[in-house]
Every structure is written in structure tokens, then in C-alpha cells.
Length: 388
Image (cartoon, rainbow, N blue to C red; front, side, top):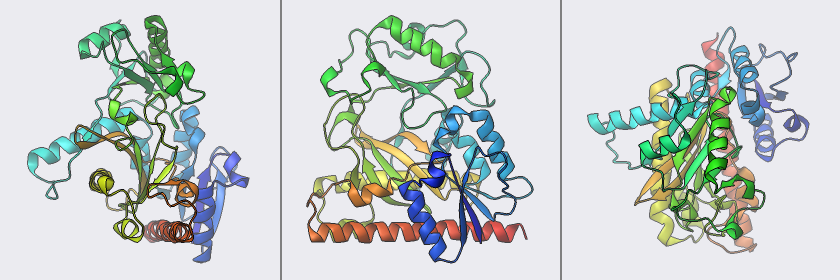
């Protein structure tokens, strides 16, 4: 079968680690695989059986072109992985967030969560000053309201607040506002390069909010409360990587703006077989299990909504807050699956570079990549068969 891996230009010839591993495994399985530049207008796509959206991370800076590219890929027949509908709602937080709220609320009311998976979403509010690039989201108009007015309405005026674009990637233009009376952020604990993104002055916060809200090309601005749990060692944000509906591994991330100084990009084994192979933090077992189950549950809800196997790959960014997993972002367009962390990142279990640990890492990576390729292979076969 003919499979395209879509990437931004700089990752076409200098492949991202994850793409390199996936490409090699798919080729080993006998497929013709080509990495294509999503911005290359001369690139033909109609001869591919599938087009897997991999590392198109600059798409958030060119949303109109990106949407045109997705439509081009599906012209005549479905080719996209994930499915076009999933990519469409996943492109803007103002689209997928209210859908997730609706799905979780519906399941709670009609009892369609027999496994009892527990979890919640970070409280999020969306605002835009103008017409967003993609209509139909949950953005509210400012209607002359200032940031201070909105924070008073939400009763968030003495809380630390996160501001970020509705369409973004890799923490792009993510700010935290620390109003008077809120818990301070220690400047020495802010990650290098992020000092300018901590807003301590009301006027700076107001100007930033207005600028983000008026940026209709990125569908305006998201406001979320800054949750202290993200700063703790055990409850810090975990990126749960879900492939084929199963969470294959996770990465614990160092917070941008303060708190625990754990090494960034810590490999957290999530598969039961991996957690049995090598000693891990027993105190963390239950939290990891609950976050894994919640990530898989969220992806399953999208699959129920858009069709079986519509979500081949996703990443749920989850922290543990008030005794339950809490989602801060679900990336189902082009998530970084962080495969290199499995091999080289800090390991939850410790163990340094012992022979046992190195062997464990290599085996875990090999099995994850094999599963990754299998999922893309099976989805490609389904797409090829459906198109005749």
C-alpha cells in the first residue's frame, strides 16, 4: 500500500525521531512510504491509499492553508488518518472542548460508563473579538467586556489564570497571569525562556488578552484557571500517548511556570506488562492507571461519535487534581508521541543506564513502534478497501 506521512518542510528531509521509526517499520512490512511537505502545493496526493498527519506542527500558524490541505487530501475519497472529521474538530480547542463536555455529561446521565472511569476537564472559557476563522465553535463575543470584567464574572479575579490561543501547538503564546492577591510565581522556578510569558501587571494581562482575542486567525483566546497540581512531583502533567485506542506510554513534563524541578520528559511506562518488567514507583501505580484509563476513555468517546477506528493516534495531557485525572488538552491532529523519550528520557523507575534498563527501553520502544505501524497499516487497508 502507498502511505504518505505529512510533515512540515523541515521534517521532510531531517525526519523527526517518531516519523523515522514509523517509516522504517512500515517499509519493513512491505509498504511504499513517502514523507510529504503539507505546504507543497505541487504535491499530488490522489495516488496514496492513506495520508497520515504526523508532524505538521506549523499548521497552527497557517490555519486557512492547513484546512485547504486537509480538504485536498480527502478529495474524491477518504485518505486521512485520523479521520477528516476528527482532524476538523481537533484543530481548535473551541470545537473539541464543548464536544468532550457534552459527551462526558451525557454518559454520566445515561449510565454509558459501565467501567466507572473517573475524570474531568479543566474549566475553560473561549472568547473572540471578531469572526473566528472556523465558524461553529463555542467562542463568546467580548461585547465590550474587559479581562477584569470577565474574571469577576467567573469569580477568578484572585486566581492565577492561563491565557492561550484556541488554535496553537507546543505551548505557543501560552501565558499565565498572576493578579494581585493570587499565589505568586517564583521567578527562579520559571522555565528558561518563559519569563516574559508570566504576566504580573494588570495592564500587561489586559493587553495580552485583547491581542489574543483579536487574533481571529487562531480562533481567539482560551481562559483556564492555573491548577496548582501541575507543579507537584506526583500530580504533574502527564502526556498520555494513545495508539489504536490503547495508552502505550506517557511522558511526565516539567511545568512551564514553577513547582517541581523534576527532569523534563520523564518516561512513564503505562502498559501493565511494562510496569511489571521493571520496578516503578508503587505509590504512583494507581494514579498512572487512572490517567491511562481516562485517556483511553476520552479517545473511545470520540470514536463512538465519529466511527470505529476514526482516531488512530491521540495524546491526552492530564494531571491529577483533587483526587481524579483532569484533562488540560486532547491533541488528536498531530500529537508529538514522544517516542524518543522511551529510549533516552529520564525513567520513572530510575536505574540509570544499567544493562537491564537499557534492554527494557529498547524492547518497550520496539513493541510500541510495531503497534504504531500495525494500527496505521490496518487503517490504511480499511481506507483502500472502502474506496474500491
